[in-house]
Amino acid sequence: MVQVRVIGVALDAARQYVILLRPITEEVDGPRMLPIWIGAQEATSIAIAVEGAEPPRPLAHDLMKTLLETVSAQVERVEITRIDDGTFYAEITLLLPGGRRVLDARPSDAIALASRVGAPIWVADEVLADAGIPVSAMEFEDDDRLEEEKLEEFKRFLDEVDPEDFQG
Image 1 (cartoon, helix red, strand yellow):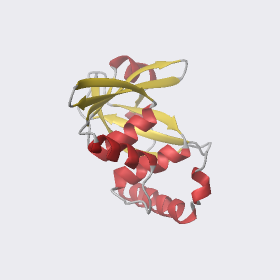
Image 2 (cartoon, rainbow, N blue to C red):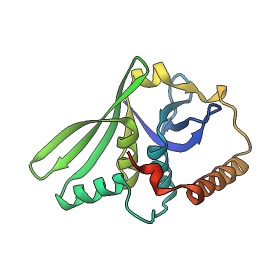
Image 3 (cartoon, rainbow, N blue to C red):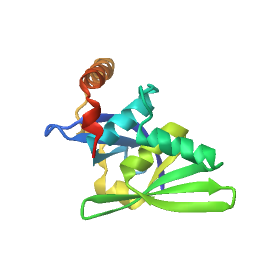
Image 4 (spheres, helix red, strand yellow):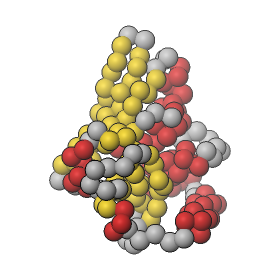
């Protein structure tokens, strides 16, 4: 397992949301980044948590955090465990008063929760090897300008978002 951090949430060329995870430590084969495509609601939730913003009303992952705190449970860690036919799988390890419990989860939900509670995120070596992209192969613009553009894009999104967008 390799510990990773959330680099950010972005839109790809096809206007699909993608979360970018990068290992905290250097890898033997060189630095790699793991992109995971996610839905708009999860992208919003992760971006809000990473930016430290407060939504006007609690989102589903805020509710999850509150529920866990209410029952004296803690998120010990989140693991992206495997990729099967293009689908990523994750687990959330909880510490409960009665012991440890591992839950199956979508990676986007697990990452959104981990981002809120400060839990470490881990990726299986095989997943990073299979789905990771060398950082050198990615095109990056000026970091300060890119961060400013991402922040402005996110602010525009928040200004334009409609609560109906989050209805099932």
